[in-house]
Amino acid sequence: MSSKEGLERYKQEKLQKRREQRLESYYRNRNLKENEYALSDEAVRQRQHREKQEKEQMRRVKETERKRKYRKRKREENINDQRQNEDLNMRNTFENRTEKHRALKKLKLALPKSPDRRVTTMVAYLQNSNSPTVRKLQSSEVISSPEEIEEHKTSKALTEDLKTVIDNCKRKKK
Image (cartoon, rainbow, N blue to C red):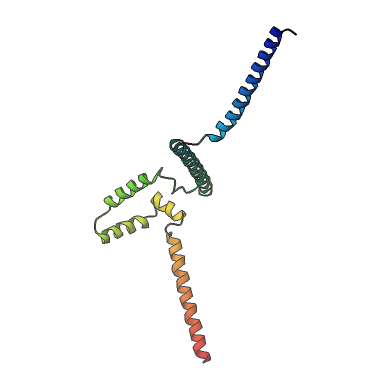
């Protein structure tokens, strides 16, 4: 081997060694840098903010899901009530509470101001059994029909008579 070739070979070995050293230091430093990264205050705040936002979003989703289930259950209950009370839909006559409130307000304003006159007017109206409204109220057992009132009076008189008979029997035994 000539001196020129020896120098060339020596140069190549040196270059190769230097390349390996650089690679080793690169990998060593890269691992060190990965471990050295520390979060800044701003990064910590941002992370906390993101976590808080995610929790808030999850809470909102759960809340809307809960409300949706509640509304669905109420709808199903209303449907069941409607099926049970198909003949009388007093609850569902008005579409919402405001409509019902307005109708009641109009009725109250239409009635006389004094309580005695109000009562007299209402009694006179409810005793008129020809009215379809009164008939519907009687069939739904909101108010008693004249026959039911008569039965009630009869049963009340009967119980009073039985009480007096029992009391008399007790007194005779003593």
